[in-house]
Length: 108
Image (tube, rainbow, N blue to C red; front, side, top):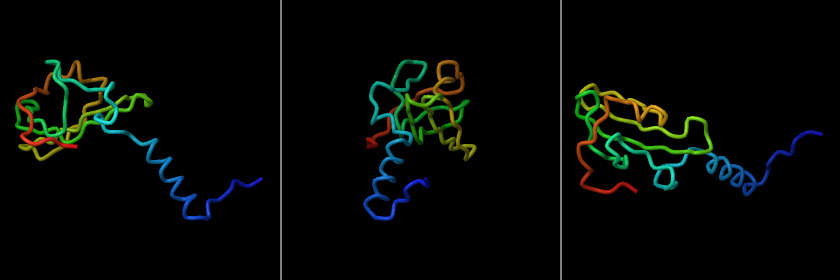
């Protein structure tokens, strides 16, 4: 028996919504899975940081306890014009990331 193919717009939208729900969720949507700097402060989008001594900014923070890698931080290095992705599993041992200050505006 062949699988049922969604033909109605509502079925297609329902399938898309299920797919979106399975996607990685931002950390602020999943409070128990907060990522932290070595100093213990919560990592937030927009934080000003030093990445290997360079001025940088936290571009995105993702958490997903259902996936094996369980989250990551995306850092935008303003000097090198490059992005660095630091998996959650490496945050505790990552020597090159240092918190400087919070963004003056909140990101939601």
